[in-house]
Image (cartoon, rainbow, N blue to C red):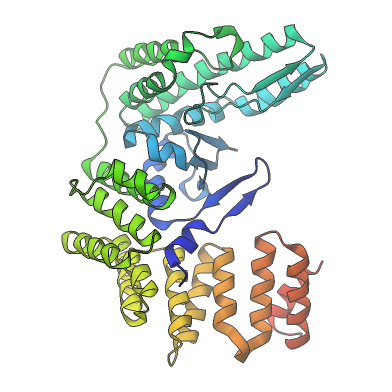
Length: 430
């Protein structure tokens, strides 16, 4: 029996630039928007232009591209200590954006390449890969030793500037600037022993101790202490962390972090998801119902229950849980897709029509391959032309051009030339 949340949570989109994958999850994305929006506002980035992408990668990292696209690694979310520390990471990356460092780095790299220097994997991200002692320095090789040192010094200076601009941005956004201290203290715990053995002139970030002292000075200079993260943000952050750990870590690691003696909501959440993943659906359902009894207005606990009931074959109960989840939250395309999938499995009177409506609504807000796949299933044999078109869109989104064109041709043979899906299929054949 397929897992709905696992399907949605794990439908991965290729990032050709660095071969990573993206995760879609309503709960996680909504929290990240809430945490990042004050920084975007302070940086004069319009709210409706900000796009957050969750990268399925263990690196303790994040980066901002073009000032509008924020990429957050699951390794960061699973390890960072609190919401303010997370905001500090994003503020640092926005500091790079505000300072125009990405463009400057490109120009500088081009200049240094002319001096026969080969640069591989030069990162300007804030942090290190989990457990990797290289501090994100990248692999530097080539004949231009002077150019290499110049490039490293250039990026170290930009990291210092981004730290300063990040602290200032946090201050302007009235967020807790001590998040920077938390981040660098955590970095020092991870890499401090290694840093004592390296030449600080051979890496592209300043040493963590230097950065920590720098932000402390900067925070003192700004004077007024910002408020710490609200308790509701902290609780939501702990739940998101637990969710990611429950889905992405081994069951033994989940129990190590969240033993059964831990009765907190986040611990029960992580264990319920982990139990669902390993097929212990009865225990998973029991834990999820405990969460719902404690928090009857949390839409994401109903979302999880909908998945579990679906796997148990209880389609009516699954539909009820997903409908309750949608009732409690707005703009939840992934949950709409999940409900549509259950409806196609139940296949009662009107279920497929309702599934089609849900998929169309979801696609208007957030086109996703899984939604097209469910839409094709909902159309089925009764509307084979539109079903083929939806499959063509699905294959197009996952980068399988040959299959996309094949289904687009099938769709056009079955649809009227005046149908919008006929025209859309034609676009895929170009």
